[in-house]
Length: 611
Image (cartoon, rainbow, N blue to C red; front, top):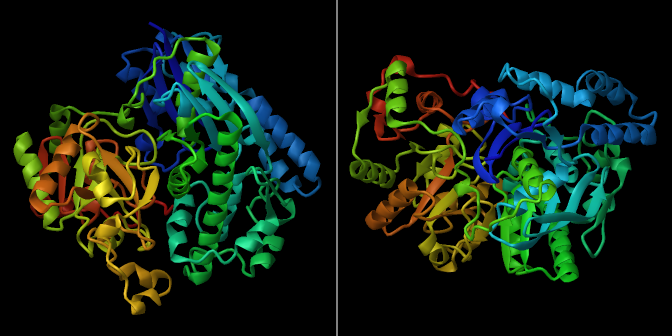
């Protein structure tokens, strides 16, 4: 038996995973334990969890691998500062002390941190370093259901690469093409995230959600700052950006080009300008990803595509690649961002470096991405008793029945079952659920439960067998990483008056039979649910369909704005008592808000720093 511990840390979304004989046993992000969103620190808690789950002490682990190479990253920083001198001196002066003290000697830093887990761990000879984009590519290809694929990775920046194309075949993986810093699609998208007043490395999905409210009227101006070739390769004109050397993403040249300063999120409201900017950069991102996809399909002639890196979380762009039918099959790593780098680094070490044979799983090797913590019924009851919660224990049949009944009565429900998801999406184990047929549900969940912007869309979970009756797609989408249109048979045509509405006014128009999950452009971010990956959630959807004729449920992550997804029963109860959720189901425990001690209510609006 051979074990590998994979680690990603020190930028954002720190995480850890464990492989045993190449099989993914456990993986989790540090944020779920520390309750700090996108926590970048050394993932002490995540490592403790994966070791415990695998029943290993650190000293038993054969190999430990970090998801990128610090020396190469340092080289890139130095060369960048030299190239842009003297412009980057302030940023350089701020960055250097930390690099010289810690990051440059990361092996030593890691060794000292790892010793905290196990006093018998006395040698750093089993610590290895992977290339950042190789880690992403490995995370996308090796768990995929393909024996051969093209892998596109795109994010902000690794060591030097920002976008790569790799070829995977069986246990072999080789990067064939790279685009290098400072030319980066991820940083381009983040520049517009910053410009529209959202938080970089956190608010990109808000920009994507805002895009359908606008018109892509600024595409031509964006193309003045990014030169896109026919094959999707691109160059960014650095005179408009400040990220290479400065402490902000954009500069005055950028602001003058678009005619406004960056939005101040504390004072400035989102208006039509910001919606049009969002629509424009989304349009350009899709164009680049589609052009790259076409070019590599033509060049390599391989029918399967895998995607990873932060840009692969842009499910709208993924949906466009799918609808263009460039590839026969697409598979996207559910933890596509840096958290998934921990998994990819371990898989690259197992297959690429150690030449271990790969057995392809026709479903995939991610176990539905249910790779995190799990609590027994006994542990759940003990935690709830300690918290002073009032609950009843139901048998399985009653639990499914009562939950489905409350859903169709438009109640908001916290649903906590099985193993926690790895990656940024809740996939039916740490979820807040609602009735998609309700035209009040989207607004109520956003404002009363999630405490977030009203424009943010919700995702539908749908029974896989009913997918194409409700949505314009017929491929598995278990990880909520593909956007598709609502089937035209289920849509409601807008009146001429409604078509004249602008911006957020569009939000209140009922567009389909499932308005709570229908975005303003008639699209939805779809999660397909199959019995073999999540029996509890499948049974709930099935029962809801039996009662309503609708095989769809609203699924949003179990948290409030700025909070990581809940990890433990205590996290779930705190969120339940800090929001206007009506019911909470944890394991077989059923909690009614009306029956809880009012003294246990939490002030959750101000609990977490807004993302």
